Length: 144
Image 1: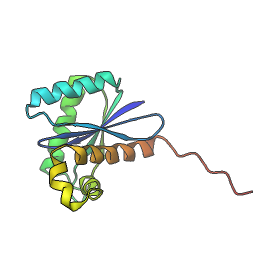
Image 2: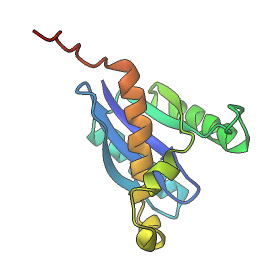
Image 3: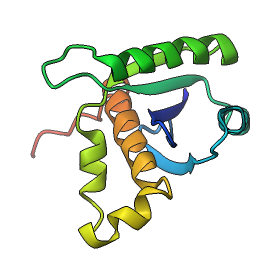
Image 4: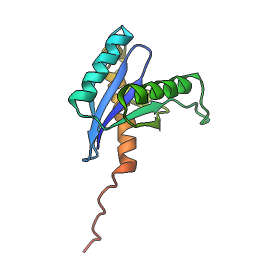
């Protein structure tokens, strides 16, 4: 299993990679202004990393309902399935961007936001949630 975590944004797409080891690691975000260029860059990552599963964040409302952003993510998931022929898993991403942003000092957030670092950290959290459900932690041995 070779997974690509995706945090879909209007301007940037955060990315993370994970495999059978069960650890998600951030990749550089896609920051191309042109949608076609972003799609081409995404295709290159999928090819280069030999991705077998796409894991997309689903931005549900705090009450668990699907609003306009969740509908956009579902439409994007359908395009990903069609374009790349890969399974797409949707993972609840409530508060991942806030959690990712909280790891950066407030004074640096504005400058860092445009780099895509926060987006890729959010993608890492999304992917790690998915991996945690698919790859069980080893059982600890009982104390002697």
